[in-house]
Image (cartoon, rainbow, N blue to C red; front, side, top):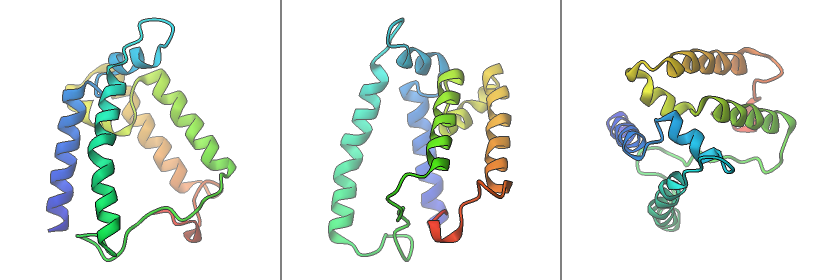
Length: 146
């Protein structure tokens, strides 16, 4: 049952990315271009997502000790900033700014076979592989990586 709800959530998320325009790298790059052809519409998409999600999380955490489809909540436990987190966030931001994609929208746009997507996704997967298989980048189990 957990897999069915994960599939449904993923489908709804993917459809939302397409409908909102977040799977369109030109729209994302225009959102990031504050001094050029700035398009603020994605800010409204993000604000709408927060407005819908925040009350749900508030109710969930107030009324439940465990999630509906698992034994425990899987939330980050670390509160410090370490260099690899800052480095990873920086690389992610640069990639997002250059390509106009982050992982979710990139995978959603992959079936459209756009050239940018066909270049971005293999490099994204290579980066994910490198993060998992490079000894200095792999989180230790006590860091709560899942």
